[in-house]
Image 1: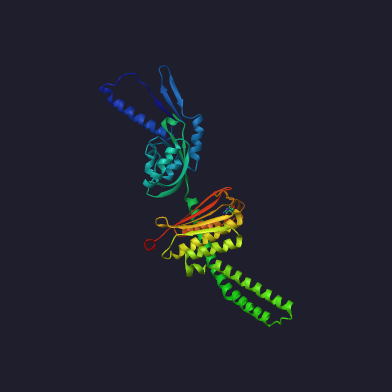
Image 2: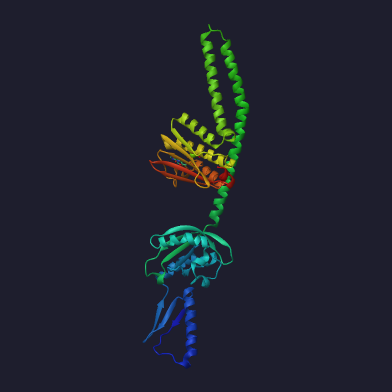
Length: 403
Ligand SMILES: Nc1ncnc2c1ncn2[C@@H]1O[C@H](COP(=O)(O)OP(=O)(O)OP(=O)(O)O)[C@@H](O)[C@H]1O
Ligand SMILES: [Mg+2]
């Protein structure tokens, strides 16, 4: 067991004793350093009658062992963000010796930008606790993404510490997120390419053949004599069914490859999709679009068009809505698409499909499409009060000037 001797004296110091006092101060400094570093298990105080032993083990010891063996960084801070205590893991995270970490300011390990974000959170955490993701600045100039959980400490606890922090290394989580994002992007791209290929085949082969059958069925109906009424009527019905089939195949082909976007632009594309949806499902759609004087970048137009399609698919599949409103606006340097439905709503953080492992890629794909063009997708939904999907995409300066 390592102990530190801490004596007390009532005599006042005189000049000849200066050297001895200096030695004592140095010894006290060393003792404090050892206590801070957890190298001391007990302190012996020389009392009037006998020595007294103050143990630093006991109840705190178990927690200290636990905290030192954690894979997370642990800190206690004073109100002015001085680090009172840090575990070894935190020292490893910031690549600094523990004795340099303790007693230094926590701000030193956080970038100026993150400090500004952290400040209100720490303030709030003094009452309740909160979480945030930031970049930790290590001593060697490298950075580590971490999640910080901030908790308030009881007043007068831990010798003036007011907050505790647990820092989790998010490097692997970030890498997995990036991998997932890259994968989703590849899936979206592959889907777009495949849709284009199928649309082209439908248009070039099936539609052409159906049109030929359509013309022949009309010829057949014309050629059948009026006296053979049942056969003539049957041929007319056949002609009608084939006509509807051609329209349906064209609709599918159009949805697969938005040629209307290429030829007539975004507003026409949104209009087409909304009208087709309203006619087919009976859900009313109100579309209000800002006037666009020039075309938006092709990627942006395609993203907005596809997100509307996917959102309407979700409305049809899940919402049981009666009305949908679609707004295309241009707030500042952005283009924004907002889609509201008055359906049953859902909890965006816990949707059942993904938990059961059944699909649930629609929203993920929409988010990916928005991210790919530098935009942000927000889902606001309240059970029984409907859902709002909002996509905001920045516009390049030349498009901004022209519009
Ligand atoms: N407008 C909406 N109204 C109510 N619930 C919705 C709405 N949009 C999405 N949801 C809920 O969110 C879940 C996730 O939607 P998402 O589009 O990601 O997956 P999905 O529609 O279930 O499957 P997929 O799109 O892959 O065919 C849905 O299962 C549904 O529970
Ligand atoms: Mg969906």
